[in-house]
Image 1 (cartoon, rainbow, N blue to C red):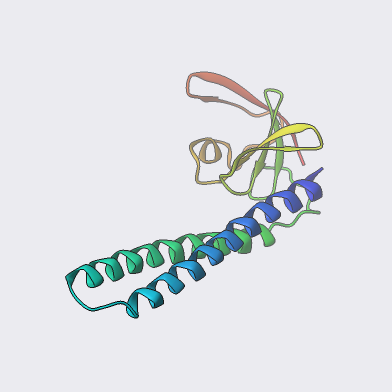
Image 2: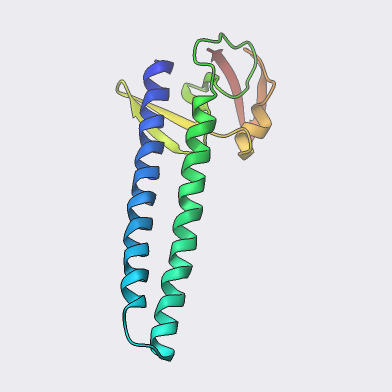
Length: 147
């Protein structure tokens, strides 16, 4: 299941990257067309607004590229004995993939929660092993399996 899961979330990351690139291209075109308009305060305000949107789109693109890089660094064939990046866990019957905070994804008709090590749950689970128990938000949790 892990190879299919990683492939699926890599595809999601690529879709984010492609969307950010498309948005960036459209904004740059709008900025360039705005440059051809007449000068004046209205023109400068419009150009500044487009430039701010370009900066936001560049940040989204950088985040998407960083996400892809991080996902590509996961050792999918590694057999894990403790919770770390790349581990697939079963905790209280639910599946968690320690990778990136993407929320729930469905793979092979199963819901899997993609969490990062920096998330509140990830921080609590890092280093834990099969059979370890912990409390999260007042709920007792137990690691039932680690792959």
